[in-house]
Length: 352
Ligand SMILES: Nc1ncnc2c1ncn2[C@@H]1O[C@H](COP(=O)(O)OP(=O)(O)OP(=O)(O)O)[C@@H](O)[C@H]1O
Ligand SMILES: [Mg+2]
Image 1 (tube, protein in one colour):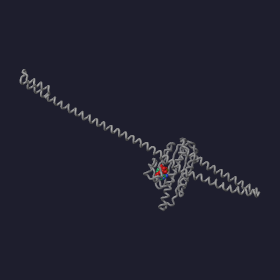
Image 2 (cartoon, rainbow, N blue to C red; image 1 turned 120 degrees about the horizontal axis):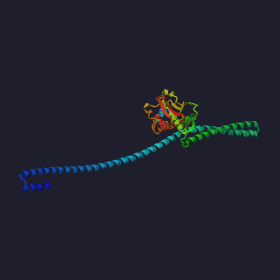
Image 3 (tube, rainbow, N blue to C red; image 1 turned 45 degrees about the horizontal axis):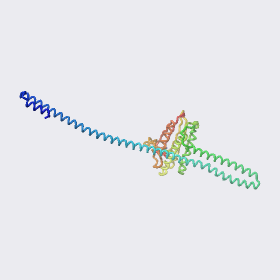
Image 4 (cartoon, rainbow, N blue to C red; image 1 turned 90 degrees about the vertical axis):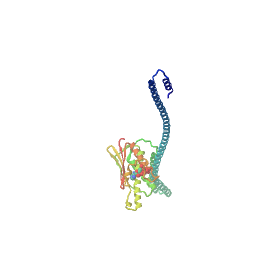
């Protein structure tokens, strides 16, 4: 029994003033008070215990949370590191895509320059022989013949000058392409631009693969006049679309040759059209290649999507083209029928 209650208990028991009945009653109350006190003590102790365990649990939870926070921080650092790595890998790929189209251009340009160079070499050689002949005739005193030869030489030199200037123009054009893209719009004749890149793509492919051949069909709308575009950028789009078109019909031709089937008669054809419609310009590039399967057509504009064998394509051609056209306020759409061919259509607003 509680110490204080014990004192009261003893006091009651030894009291001479209380009746036996009163003593019994008072002692009963005392016992009951002692029981209540015991229960309260017990409850208090239990609450203490709960408090202690809760505190321990809380401490553990805080520790666990701290560990998780540290883990999340670590993941975040790793994620932002791999994001940085991805960004630099993407930049490298874009660069290599630029280099690839430069490679395609270079082969075409080499072909373009070779032609005037052949003229310059041939006419120089002929002129040298003519002048040697002229010296002979001078010795013979045949002035009539000397005159005739001199006129021929003048004509030849005019041709040499003409072809030299042509090569000069090609080199200047080349420098313009390699010039760091200013990103500025210039009034440009879209037909000349398209035709230039069409020839570059064609000769570029021919230079790589002598057996490559394709019909080129063009239909230009000469009423378009000059339009405001970034010529290098649109040139790249045209180059990408035409290279894809040549690739597609060349693949179909190769498959036909492998099977030695009626596809042997197949004639790869790429068709390029420019058209002015109300306040819009349209450029269409079509081919009669294998077409694009329904299940991949939604993916072709995604960066890095390619069906070319590993190492052959970056899969950036169309996604870059899409971005360039979008930056010009235009649209780039595709329409394809498996086995029949594919058409890409560019639309620009005229006053962009
Ligand atoms: N004219 C087309 N005919 C059939 N499929 C095409 C045509 N143009 C594009 N594709 C499909 O779209 C894919 C993506 O084209 P994209 O130009 O973006 O990359 P790529 O040509 O594969 O690679 P890269 O342009 O770097 O050489 C191609 O791999 C091909 O499957
Ligand atoms: Mg491509």
